[in-house]
Each structure stands twice: as structure tokens, then as C-alpha cells.
Length: 316
Image (tube, rainbow, N blue to C red; front, side, top):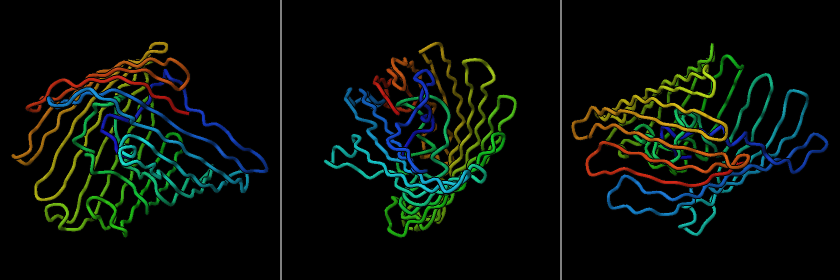
């Protein structure tokens, strides 16, 4: 899954996602999950025009087999038909994995899936979040992934590992590891992320390693208001390093939600242009799990202009 730094949440005003239960008998359950998003978008590129996109069109089946009161075994398969797949005339196979689930010991998954760094990010943007930390090519996870998650409420952590023996990743990475650890206390949620990839030296300016580190702080102790801070660092080798600081907030009022975010990115290389990025949006939960939204965003990079867009998304 590819995403920008400030692009991870769905507005609470739209309601909580509830999968559709298709089957439940003799300790076997099958649930249907999905999401759809259609929007019109004009980017910061001065030459770009407002155009329609199908950003999400996913459907997944989650099957679980109850072994005992604590333990389940299951499988998940997802299909995607968003704009990138539609232009190729195909429907892509999304996350597909086997999972082991324990109420006591957490979950362990094997297959094609998103690993831990895919969870990183702050804010409630739809289209114009920060892209400096997670570039379009730095997708996390893959077809040979393993992921473990444990959450005890006040404390949580996750581990992810991904091989690339089929050389499918853009960086021809030999292996990839990521992790997070976090704690929740007095309305605060603190999370530290780290990812490390060993890559083919010829792929990224001769470097053997790519590292990504993030620190996030969230505060939800004020009714209807969420405040978030993030610091992110990348090291792509040969002095190609960058630091990003970001803040974001969202406020919910009945079916409405209002959000904004701003960030500053500083590169070590003189050839890279430092910049500030921002977004502001509003969403309206018109029905359960369904949101109408509009957003504007921008950056102070050269030869850019204010971006804007609007759309609708729904999930179950």
C-alpha cells in the first residue's frame, strides 16, 4: 500500500467500519470487507488539470477457524481495481495471507501484506499529505512478508520482515525489516518506528542500506479534538538524508470533521530543495461509513500552485 505521510485516518464522523458477516457456523466465520473512493483532483503541478480518479476499489474476504477460546487460524484475500489497475485493464491481487490469531499472544501473518512502516503517519488528509518521507517508490511489505503484532492496551509493538527473492521491489532489496513500539498514557499515544532495507548496491546510488525512522505523538484528551506531532528521518546513502517535522489536528462536530496539517522537510544535499507543505479539509459523514469531503493543499516548492479536490469514500 502506498500512502503519504499525513494520509492514514478515516473521519470518525463517518462511523466505525463493520465487516459484513457472510457465514458463521461450527467455529468458522467468513467476513466481507471493502472500500470505494471516487474523487476529482487537481495537483500542485501548474500543467495539471482537474480529473477523476478511482483511488480505492478494494474487496476482501476474511476467513477464521476457531481452534479454542483463545486461538484462531485464518486466511485473507483481497482484490483491488483502483485507477492504477484500471488503466492496465486488470484487477490486482491485494493483500493475501495466512494468519494465526491469539487473544493472549497477538497475531502472526505470512504472505502478501503490508509491514509495520505502512502504519506510520499522522493527520487526516485525503490527497495532499506529505510525501517526502514515504515516496511513491518506498512501498512497504510485499509478497514474501511476515508480520507480528501485539497490543496490551497501554503497551504495543509490531515486527515486520520482507524478502525479495523474486526481485519485484523497485530497489531490488535483498531483505527489509521494520518495527514499532508504543505506549498509551493519560490521553497520549507515543510511537517509535524504524525500518531498514539491504538493497542491491547498483539500485540506489551505490548504497547498501536504506533506513527510515519516525517518532509520533498523539493527544486525544480534549473532547472531539485530536492533536498530532511527527518527526521522520530518511537515509538513502551518500549523504542523501532528510528530516521532516509535521503537526496536524482534527476536530469533529456532529457529522462534520475539519482537519489541517503542515510540515517542513530539510534535505542534507544541496541539490535537494527544502520545502514546507500543508493541507486543509472538511468532511461530512452523510451515511454510516460514508464521507463526502473537499480538500486544498500546497507547497512552497518552485513552479507549483495550490492543489484542490473533492470526492466520496465509503467502507465496510
